[in-house]
Image 1: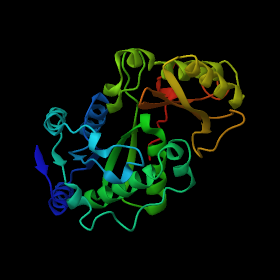
Image 2: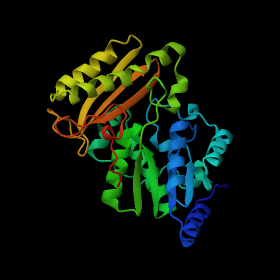
Image 3: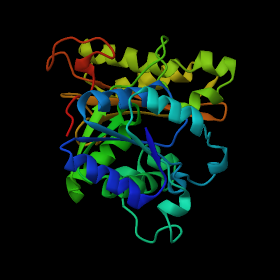
Image 4: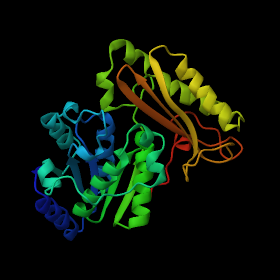
Length: 302
């Protein structure tokens, strides 16, 4: 596995792979790799002839009150995971290499969706995410790029950026990876105390129960939102951020659920903020499906 720190060298490596008739698979990460990241690398390895991982803690996506310096940096362990998953190249640039002129004046506007839900909590976060992803797409060139569904709003915004700005990139969505108790795997989970870790699966429980309501015929989005909020609110260690029901295509808030909808929850456990989501299809529109099954996930790709 090759480790590259310069933009020109990374671009040349991807161009050489395509010249060799290999499809480039891109997995963009900020490090602190876990099984969720590994699943993206494995998917890319299975589907592509050349797997490129980026390892870069992007300062642009850290908002007010978020400690950039506290973000875990485990480079050696991350390189070990990447090599074990069959990665061909890791692009590990410095901040100066990615932003040689300092913070860029030109950035990618995420549009109205970027100011809602996670965007309302984390001012400027999605502008920073889309800007660095756009740069990575430009450096990589034609590729398939793999993202996890846990960060569903981020995935939706990246898809919109690709649709509107036309980089030669196919966005591939991969299912959320979970712990045995349902907690979505996240680099933030290590910040939880023992008691907070025991409480955190309440997010998955809220989603699962709400999904069951919809499959049994509940079409009122308000009722579903209230149920999720009630489940999370009943956990003493959880402080609800939001419970939302949106159309899975438009991401507009729903009054009634008649087609594929995405259920989303966010909560703080102490100082740690966690998010989770699931796609549900009403029983009248789709065969029955259990939580986490293929019919309950967004498998459209791009």
